[in-house]
Length: 115
Image (cartoon, rainbow, N blue to C red; front, side, top):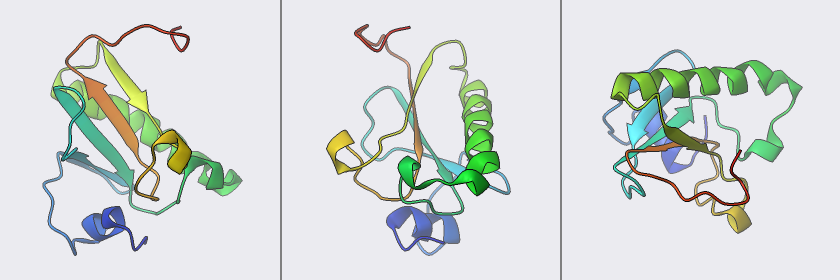
């Protein structure tokens, strides 16, 4: 378990309303939403950042993607959402416990990342 704020949320040390939970992850609303729907999918096992993941994390990483789809369906945004993972401070990561951002409910600008 990570000693970050997300580790403390997962362990129950810091209260949070889970909108989704299973054996491997939880989902909560982001406190500073960047879109009408902004949810964080947080693994219960802490990995500081995606680049720190190892082969043994393969099943957990796949599970997080499937959980993100379930949460999007649960919220009714499964037809159009953006999934983001920030890796490192230079990419905007501020909490070093791997997590996925689900953003939806507005149009997103197309750019060089479109595809």
